[in-house]
Length: 245
Image (cartoon, rainbow, N blue to C red):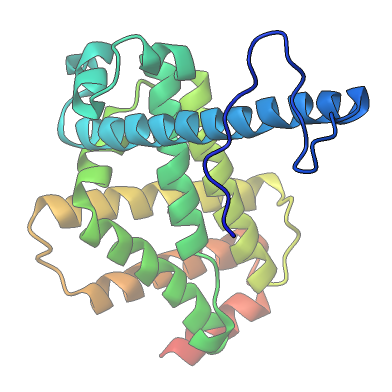
């Protein structure tokens, strides 16, 4: 037979178990410890949900407006949260921008890793460039808005630098080169990085007026020529270029 709703004991009474026996002090203490944990878990989930709402709203705003034109109150309004929450969770607008930048850079880093199924070394390098271009073609506001409006502080630079270095290490491993490159190779790779970002921005600004395949080949050739020069004619880089033709 089913039981009806259990009523709370009256004040001053001890709660009882189903068989009418009062629980021990130890069980009561365990129960009192379990309840806050459940409550804390729910509160933590709600806090995570609010953070995600704030980051999503900030991503949209930073992608469509200049950084200096956006206030923390604008972000709170777009996220439909109390005006003090963005500052409470992220320490202010710059902290929130860095959080948004991390999300974008993590996505980009995951998408532009080499993929073995692309084929040989040359095909994998081309695949890295292709996925970079496809990502920003799908989200042009990130390149032309978010990344272009960076406040340029140390925290923002550190996030971007971490992603760029991860991409460079992947390329160096593909070419069987040390992941801590000598100065000339390091400079060559950073020049290629800047070239890729400027090429992408120009392509998007001008209505994607160059075929994607041609841009991929251009990025590949520029990178391989730079690596060959910086390494004194690395055989693997030369072989990758020959196999791509």
